[in-house]
Image (cartoon, rainbow, N blue to C red; front, side):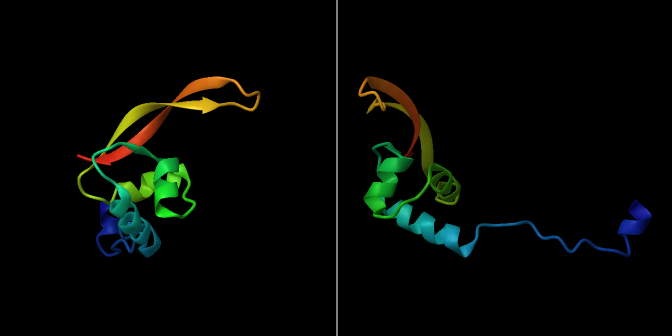
Length: 92
């Protein structure tokens, strides 16, 4: 394998964040503070509908962002109250 690899260098380059992800990271950074916010709260504060996965991918590229678990009260389809645990992000 080493003999083959020497004359055939790899053309693959490590992937970084896309321009779209970096744009999302910039928008999200503007609304983050020391108060933990869930992906849904971040999305509402930005005024754009981001999914939890989009927020999670974008915050990886913001320096100083930390995550934690928070519990929020929710109401299910039957109208019953329940507590759910969510991942929240904050600048710490």
